[in-house]
Image (tube, rainbow, N blue to C red; front, side, top):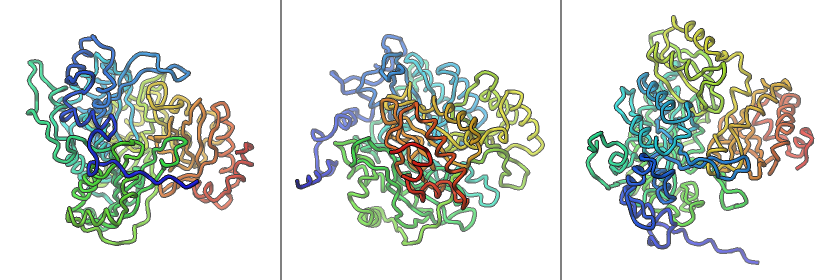
Length: 589
């Protein structure tokens, strides 16, 4: 039987709005995110007012699509079966380019916000943002107003605008960019520039959320979006900047990934990758886990315009009917990377130089004490935070400890792509006090935490995330404890887990990646590289939850007992035939 001819993509260049998805129609009719095109067109502010007055439990499904652009996800707590029968709640995500640096005043505000409006935890994300969970409708507007107050900052004010939705998401950067004593750079400033350039211009966010007590707004009325237009992008867009000695941002998983070329403290050129993305839909082979394509080398002064040019090309040429095909990773391959480079040159004046890419650096964690760049003897402390959930629980009061240290020493705080914290600019003479304060709050020292616990993380997944098929953050600790009991806690292995194939925690590039499949089953991939340059092979399509611990123990034992050449774990797992690894584990395909 002959194969079907692929249909032509539905884009802004060849179709009208009636041919596009419902989400596209909602965005187009929102007039810059001000309005919700439900049964009757109404303002988003009206739905927020109903929540604040406790006249409604949640927002409409049409408003849900608009709210993502404001950093809001509508959720409903789920039962163990996965059914959505619990309370209506919201997750609110804060956009924090380069993972900060947060000032002491901003950090205090975040802690207060978590206690007053959420569930008293701060959830650090793999894109270096911060999430608030269990935000009830009555607190939604109050939380966003509280975050947006003018706290003293260190380069970027806090807000939730653009943390989700069909626009540029949080712009990532290696957290040690300007801290590395051997190679301090300025890519954080570049990340801030990109974030500002690609920020939405409509004043809807400010008009809706940031009125003062007298109802006055902090921004003039404007629906204009000079970059995004009334349709915004077809899907989310992600940008990240690595460091020549750290790829914790997973540069090849970004829509646009940049690696500075080593030639001094101010790089003049960047290696440019484009078209990465790990999200797929199970059993739909036309969706793929893909790494970015190498396009060449771009000058520092053209980086922002290059990213903006790619955004505009995606806006005009991206798929607008099938959202599963709408990411830039599909658009660039449909157009062809050489065609995209010609478009960037002819339309935007971007000169991309042919070059051999420099080797990708490894993913690094920075746990423990690290000397900072600069003439003064200052340090940053990498604090492991399991799956990024910063909280006080039982005898371990990590959130309180960090808050006390930041307040006392007036430190800066950075979020890492591994969901950990960096406490920055600590004077040498205060290191002992910091260690003592952490210990007094029940926080174990880095050397007391097993390697697998430090190098594993998961997305939130069930019971809150509406897309999750399985648990992730809630079950990962039980896996880690089982590995530790078996004496496998110090096997050097990167383990990541996600509750669905959107892969927010980036399991496909981990040395062992776990992805929720459905009915509490998990897919397991092995053999991703420590440098993020290889996607893991599928070891098992589906493993039931009750078999996960024996399988993981088998994988870790295979690495410990059979890697006689001392290869990096990902390399060892990639080279080993899958059937041989399955035999060592004791479970067939």
